[in-house]
Length: 97
Image (cartoon, rainbow, N blue to C red; front, side):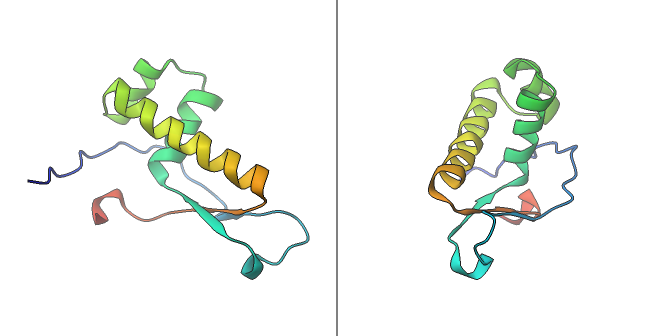
């Protein structure tokens, strides 16, 4: 039995949908998708400098789930930066799963 994913609270807005290496056309790049919950985790932990327990409360998830979301976001960003890939910000609803 598959459990429905718990609603995650997202309070940030993103003004850009792509980040890519300079001088390489987007069509020539592999892309990595960052989901909105990953963007929110980055904002809360890295920009707002909240402890994971406090950030998890704001997102309405458990502390371990928040840690997993944040680790996934960090890995995707590192991969894009180090391997020269484009980052696409997914603006889709988390309820679409």
